Image (cartoon, rainbow, N blue to C red; front, side):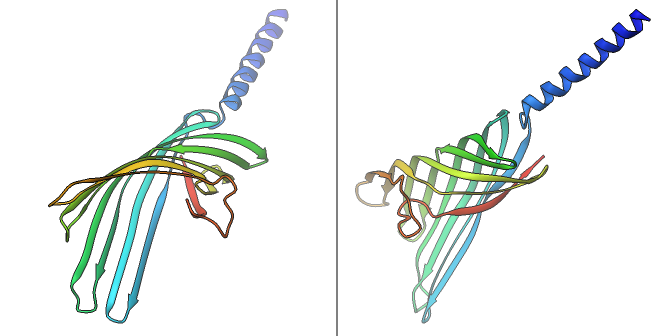
Length: 203
């Protein structure tokens, strides 16, 4: 009888330890998919312009409250004048690695801080010029867990520092450096990054 009780105790302890270990890991090992998709167009008389961006992002939780991700996509824009002549036609390839740290606020609501390092390489077909840029971006945000496979998140950039180089077909290249910080970013003064709202799918 004692042996049976001992074995039962060991089994219960093992199950409890396994459950606690699984709970402590939280989302560790969970993969997610998100990203950014946008399209804009405008027309004044016969002149028109358009721009779009497709940037899917895939990531995984490397710790219960830390995740890393990688976005790869394209940004393109085109402008035609009133005579139908294309005055600009640009395409930019984007690679955006990022890392996030989460803190639980209450229930399914989490606050997070994100650091990203977007690298962009583009070409303007009309002027036959090339551009290359990279930056460091810091963005806080909130993430609400709707269910076990979807969350809703919102964020905006409060810090950005980076450099950009433009190389024309003829002439000297131009390199610029920029630094922006606005921790008190308000709705009326989003000089760095607009408020973004999106969903993230877990699997």
